[in-house]
Length: 614
Image 1: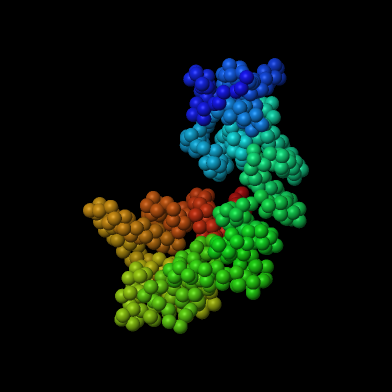
Image 2: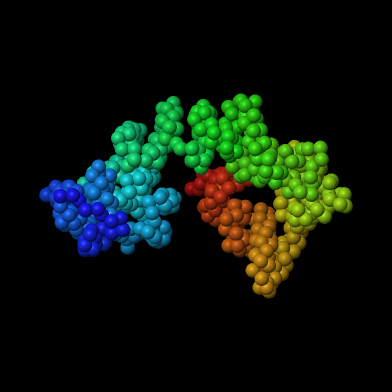
């Protein structure tokens, strides 16, 4: 008898009979299956899904639906069966099993992350796993194990198990609770993800076996991938190899790690985001030869993407091949320049944000170091260059870059254009240039010249926080000068208080959303400036903290504002909170030298305090 065609829109068959119900399951309460005739029965029912008799197929579908989670492992495997009828029915049965992804014992942050998990397609579930892993607590580990055990997608379940494997073991007694829960979840399941969970638990007790354990997992997955490339895509295998590399590097086995990393490259596609991520990973581990291999393998993709070309240039520069590094960078820069000077400026900003300061400078100077710079259109590029050089403690060069703009602004036709384009007065720019000079003289030990530069800066911008902080530090060895510095700081704080109150009033009276948003920007800047000033000198630290919190409320995604908030916590004696916020700021801007320096200062302070503790 021929099998009737199954409609793609219904699992009810030709007669419209509802055979597959929704089964609600509770993973946290699932017990290990007893080894009985049930396993054999599930296998038999799976085979019957491909029966020539329609009624047999329908009854088998209903029986498997009634079994729910007890049939999940077998159905997950059967969805790739060579018999199309079995594969289609198994896939639909899997979709009919409703797993309760949230349990009553889950922490609030886990519950929030998993709130809509069941509605997400497999392709969007990886981001949920990333968020769970970032929590770093026992509740998140249990949630990852639950997904690894019950997600019907082999890729998603493996990725969840991989996150579990890579996680740090919790301390006792939480470790014992997680271990017991995971053992109950896994039971006797022979699913690959379940096996990895067991290995993860074993690694908690025997971390010295990590290398052998990871090698075993990788070899197993590699064999599975080669045997079933359509079922098991390269994503999980790549992630496994990356993790294996980290384990080897942790155990100082760099040569082996390099060999494993080589195995990743053939698993990559020409997707630009994937290649950029891989290039960055190889750069961090200082494997320029593998970046060259990546370039040779994806030559066209590199030449079509300036971001990749600058990764190649940076790798060559770090390995000492300056000539070929500059050649790659020049090709990329010329490609961007076809879109105009503004695109070159944006490229510089992007490179700076990625931590490629050498090439960012090259892009900026393409517009500033020319015989006749276009000050009207590109004034902001001079500021970008100067501020980056200041962050890199190249303050003499920073001052010169900004002074060039200030000198151009001395001409009446250019002054208005520069101020309009930069949204800063020429006096404010001149004050900033003088501040850079003061930083330079401070680094070279010329206190007299530093004092003169500070006076010039404050005469042009009396409430500039950075300049006042530098003045305060300069005056520490002179009681008279310190008194003057304190007075100037107090006057500036009073001025900021007035500005903040006036701005709040303006916000309340705003008549349009646009006006309100612009005024809120002003308020955030004012709050941030006064908080930064007080927290780096002296004064009402609680007021500074309140201002920093207000600025952060208005602009939570600003790394600079979060940097100020961290400094305020430090000033109020909340060192751990300061470190927490500073690390969060670095997550937002991971390559910022000032942000890194402040975190290092906080950590050293904590270490010093710990060493003095009884």
